[in-house]
Image (cartoon, rainbow, N blue to C red):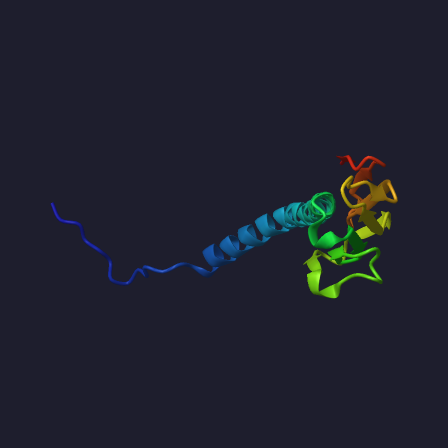
Length: 151
């Protein structure tokens, strides 16, 4: 038994099949784009909060170790966090700056400059830093007068 193939039939896709495929892809992209955007914003918020916490801990450890016979501190501003050596951000030793940048869509409120004392590693000042994403998701990072962190 042999199969006869009609030479007049095309082996490609029809215009209707192509339009349906493109429509389905566009529909799926439209459904998942807001989800992706929300995950992206949450990731930016988590990265910024994590960078601030890590720099506060690192500055505290360097101050307790009396690294460079100096105090260490952290300066936060929109888009970046800077670990510095010195009595304050203005009077710091710029050569020792460690800067971590994050998304400019993250806003900060509360503590902007924290300096840790030599040996004891106690922060001045203590308080809370509120980190807010563009979707109004918030992380509050609290630094106590003894230098413990909660977030």
